[in-house]
Length: 303
Ligand SMILES: Cc1cc2nc3c(=O)[nH]c(=O)nc-3n(C[C@H](O)[C@H](O)[C@H](O)COP(=O)(O)O)c2cc1C
Image 1 (cartoon, rainbow, N blue to C red):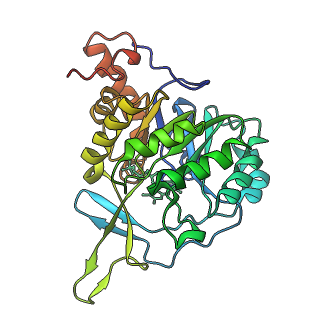
Image 2 (image 1 turned 180 degrees about the horizontal axis):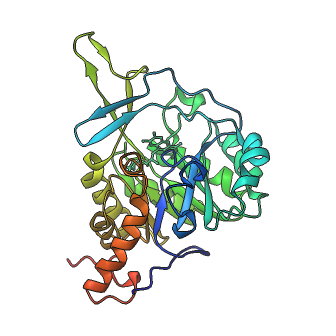
């Protein structure tokens, strides 16, 4: 069997397969179905400094080969996480990574600082697709300055592995990735959801309560793959790829495009055991192709 272990900064993963934030709860919800200790890591729900109610319903709409959501980062806040959720996660048997969101550089940094104190959380993933309240709600991650401002504030207060999750709703994702790297990000992950919309034509209304939402699932895979490939050529830090991964073959594509690890999101809603199937499938694919280590295919795309 091929070895699957990979490294993101000083975070050693037993395999490159992680769960994407917002699609796997805190992992505990899946414990009866999935041997959690086999996962590379679990990236938990978006966590903010203060509790958030999220958006009104409906928050989800199905589309061709994908789904739209506008959940709006519903969560009980970082203090609740530290007090009530973290104690349950301590012995889960794999790495737990917290996805951190905010509305200003200060709220991101304060939330990250609280998580820095939790000895069993070796990394955070910074969701910079959140609206900047001081700038009319434009997402931090759509400009180099906005992205840099968040990474700078967090880097000053967070000392473990810092993964910055990039927005695909930009003109040049490589520039944003470089801006994050320059401010001290240890890794970048991409993509978050693509802005989209669906309309209920009988009622002449958007299908989602706030009009627009984030598109995910197989429909976004070609866009995600292109962006991962562009970013992997632009930065020296490890890249984590996601967006529409459903199978081990999809994962191999992302790895060949230059991703060191991958995340699986929407596919968990269709098959809660998909992560394990991708790990086993990756192993089988590597064996069938005479590879002794997954590192042999990372960035191995031929020009
Ligand atoms: C219901 C839902 C909730 C999500 N919540 C978050 C979140 O809290 N933080 C975040 O960074 N990304 C969040 N995402 C984005 C996913 O983590 C992922 O980037 C995206 O769905 C693309 O991957 P996929 O096509 O494999 O789902 C969410 C996605 C969905 C579908």
